[in-house]
Amino acid sequence: MWYRIGRGPTRDYYYANVDLIRASQISMAASFALFMAGLAAPGLSDLVHGELMTMGLLSFYLSVMYLQHPAFTNSMPKRPLSYVLLALFALGAAGRLAHMPFSWAPFSALYIALYIPGLRGRNAPPNILTMAGLAALAFAGSPWQLAMSFPAASAMSLMLRVDSAKRKFSVGVATAVAFAAVYLASIFSPLPRPAATALAFAAFLAVVRGVYISREPYAWGTAVGRLLPLLSPLGFLGLPADHFLYMGIAVIMFSLCIPWFVPSVFLRQVPKWRSHLPLVPIAASALRLTGVGSLVGISAVLLMAGGAYAAYAVLRERAFPLGPPP
Image (cartoon, rainbow, N blue to C red; front, top):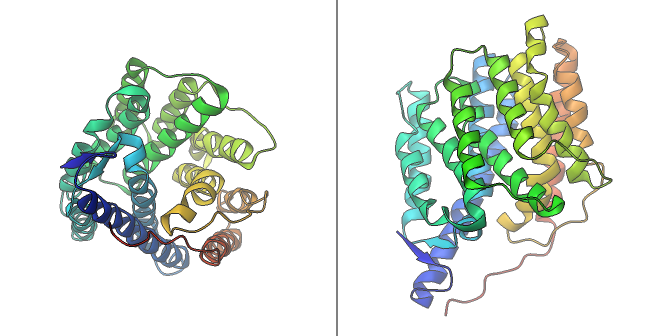
């Protein structure tokens, strides 16, 4: 199913890498379209808005995580598995729209199998988190469960990688497995959704030893992104509880995933990002979480503008072609 990094027939490995990049690019382009459509949809239907936004989250994190799959697992999926995985993702989305149960299970099963080479060494703990998210996706029903599955787990696994490198600590496999158990239990337990969201993110903060603040946008941006889901129980007071999760993930995307990884998806030089980029989703979160109609609309416009700016900033940069096949 895969080649070890640096092994295998040179030409086959090259084209397998091209397939992986193309699959990631297709997923990222789809996520942009889904997000833009979803942000424009609340005036038409809250249900359509929720489905489009969660599909956008899934497509975004498939792109970001799959592009880094070789680094995370020390392996390259063989041809044509990248396109098979993409087809199974589309099948899961279509099944979701057709109200088919477990429509994401084939996608999750294949993607989990591709993570098996990454279950050793220092990559194992964050990979366990990602695999737990994929397992949750196979059984997810509501938009909240979809967001809490692969997208939330991917965001947490990325922050675990970055935090452990920047703050010089390590997380063992046993700790990762224990957290994965708490995380999965929170998603599928009878707990109210606000409490379940707060429980999962509180457990994550315990794993990564809280938050740290510095002038770096990643630090203060993801600090806000981690803390917003902890405030989900404010939903018991009438605030939009699930959006504490959704907006927290949005802040993490603008603080980590978009500036760090999206340029690589499109083989572009990293732009000189404005240091206040995370303030766009933070401001949008403050407006959205009021639940006031006019402010919710402004929040959507802010996020659309932030997404359009990020796309423009990336695509205007110089491209790095892969070069001819060997």
